[in-house]
Each structure stands twice: as C-alpha cells, then as structure tokens.
Image 1 (cartoon, rainbow, N blue to C red):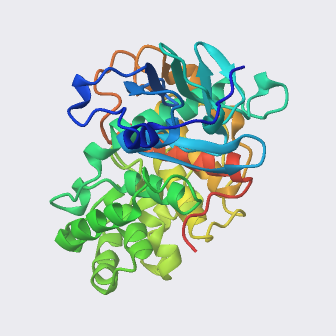
Image 2 (tube, rainbow, N blue to C red; image 1 turned 180 degrees about the vertical axis):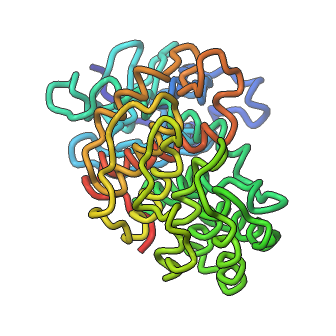
Length: 392
C-alpha cells in the first residue's frame, strides 16, 4: 500500500515560483486524481478531479472544495467521518477505496499518483456479515431506506401547515426521536421542526379538531410546551360527542380518547368507548390503538396492565410501522416486526418502503411519514438499547 511521502505542497511550490499565478485551467499540474463519495443509500454525493503537484494534502484540498469532518485516530491518524454531507451514524464508517482496493490507511497517509481514484463509501462496520457485528441485511436495508427518505422526502413536508391538521406531526416525532438521541443534527434539525409545528399550532382552532388530529395536537402541544387551556375546554365538549365506534375513519378512536386519561377527564368519556374496552381488530384497525400506546409510552404514561400489545402482521405498512413505534417506545423486542416491513414493503428499485405495490405516491404522503417515524423509533431502541422515549 502506498504511503504519503513528506514534501512540498502547493503552498511550498508557489513560494518557489513553480505554481501558476493565473487561472487554474491555464496551469499544467503534475498530478490529477479523482475523489468520489458514496452515501449510505448509494447516492453519489461527489465526483471531482483535483489537480496538484508532488505530495498532495488531500484532506485540505477536499475540505477547501466541500464539507469534510472527522477526528484524530490513534491507529489511522485523522479519521474522516463525513464528506459532502454524507450520513454520520455510529453503525457506519466512511471506508476508503484506493483504485478499487480497500485501504485501512487514514486520509493523511494516502499517497497520490497521477490518475488515482479514491472512493469514500459509507459502509456498515457493525454487520452480521463482518463476523462480529449485530445488524443483519434487513437492518441495513431499513437504515438505507430511512436515510434516503430523510434526505430526499422529509424536507418536502418539514414546513408549517395552514392549520395543525395540515402539518406533519409524524415528521416532528421522527426528528425528535433522532436528535434527542444524538443522531446527526445536520439531518435532524429540531429548531426548524419546532418552529414549523409551533406555527401550525398557533393557526389551529382547537374547537375544530376531530379524529386523530385531537391526539396529535395534544401530544405535540405538550412536547412544545404550548398552553392547553383552550384545548382542555374544547376537548371536554368533543368527548361528549363520542358515543360509539362507527364507520371507517373512527379507527383512531383510542388515540382520540387517550388524552382524557392523562388529563383526568375519564368522567367525560362514554363507557362504550373507554379505551380498555377497545379490542384492536381487522374491523377497527390497529392504527389508533398503536398511536395511543406509542404516544403514552413516549411520555412514560402507558399502563401496561390495560393492554397486551400484539406483535403481528396487520396487513399494511402504516399499521405495522405504528406497532413498531409502540414496541420501541415500550422497549419490547420488535425485530420480527422490523423484518416484516422489509419483507413486505421494501422496493429494491426505488430503495424505499412502499405503502402499497404500484402506488407511485407511496413515499411522499402522510402514511409514509408514519412508517419512517416507526423506523426511527426502532433505530433508537436497536442502536441505544433503550426504550425510545423522546419526551421527559
């Protein structure tokens, strides 16, 4: 393996009068080398040729062209963690390939010859395939789909809605999961998300809230520290309008009613719809049930004596992802459910989890955002070995 030799860099050559005083394109450099950066999801973030003389300071040249971060390492010298915004995740390293051959050298130990190509590729070091890791193929595929969604789709929905109902509660939850557990602040910007949610909440008439939006508003407002006085009065009235589980659209009922238990409003809840009497089923669905469990668990208020949360295939991406979130919030084993998401919904052509086969919009609407919030919770539980509680 080639090692870098000590010598004059571009600055030294310039002092000797060897470097051009004019435009870069008019100077004949001795060496040209190419650098590529491949992110966790396979996206090519950088493909650029650098020109130099003699012994290049590759780290300085890349950093002068694009973003580069890392830290000193006793074994390899400076260890690069990210280039051009590549994902930083503790299960992954930025591996260097020199002319197609993997090298264990640090960036400061690389020697540049004319025509060399260096590829920096994000790869999982903590894989079962490596012989000493814990992430199997399904875990890696989930990570790849998750980060692709975060980079490409999440920014489209991370904005204030005209009302709370049109904002993205699930995106806010996902960002909170990740940022609060020390994942990349560059990707998970809680300041931007919080501003968007506060703006949406300020536009919302609490008396107009119905269905799932009731629970979403309540838990978001609590997390953001929003005054709930107006909500509490309107919520008592809303509870009086709920007398039974009815047509499709009321499958979220456990979630709608759940604030009553933490607010001490059980007396306003009709006996026919009290959450303990609700049995999740194909008829009523599992979304509201799993939202209820996940949200109360996030606030450390879930009563495990009231429910036996099932770990089973409920037939669609969102129900299964919501169950995944609930299990992660309770720190229950959810690997079986995570594997099911990959088996049933991972699309190798797009690299995403698809809501339904053939659904062209399956990666961009609210249901998909729920799915990735569930994956975020699973990642926190899997990686940190703790319950995915995001609110203290």
